[in-house]
Amino acid sequence: MSGKWLNTYRAGMVPPLHRPDPRRHAMTKAAAVCSVLLGLGFGLPGTYGVWYFAREGQVWTFLGFPTYGDGPFTGWGVPTTTHRCS
Image (cartoon, rainbow, N blue to C red):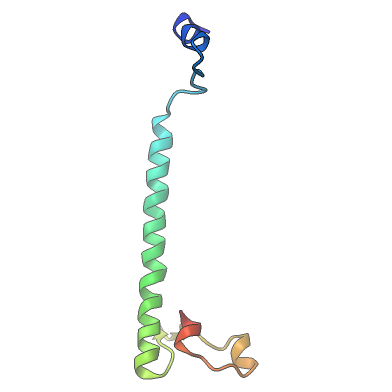
């Protein structure tokens, strides 16, 4: 240990284990941006799909594909409701 850290260690303070890495800060920001984009990407269409089902009474079709339904619950006879969509 260098003299500076040795003196603080003797004073009862714990020396830092590592120096802050600027790349770690950038990775944390990138992860936050990805989380926001994923949240918007799945959240906005999901919200619209529930709103459409509540208004029209049928499942929203996106690019020719139904966004919900034809799963195991439909096969078991459980009806689609807005609570199950959200």
